[in-house]
Length: 130
Image (cartoon, rainbow, N blue to C red; front, side, top):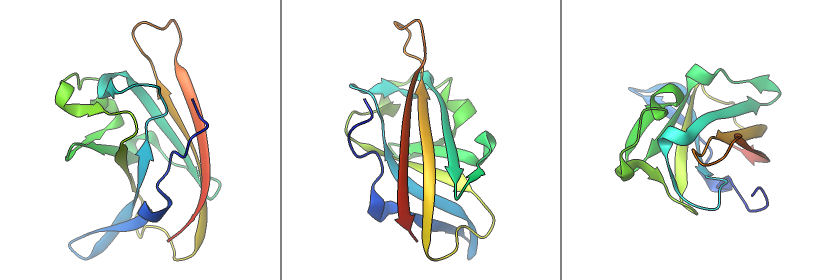
């Protein structure tokens, strides 16, 4: 499934809370041929500028609500389907965010549809500017 654009290049930005930069975010498309509930999302693996991002530092926002990757495993409500062709927002906790300038991200979405005997992994890379 990994042939179409997965990142919104204009969406990369630092995230501030109460004036403190707590991380960065970007918009990410599901790399699957249909929509799915968040419960089948097993992982989003990221490496930014060659540095691995810890799983517990990644959250995903779908339909206005934010979940950790671990919380996603229990989200079966159809209100929180990651719709085909739509972006979800991924937020990465990183004190101070990313410096201004060019960065690279290597990502991988991993899902486990109940009707498949294996997980589906979709790698996706981009160079972006903050």
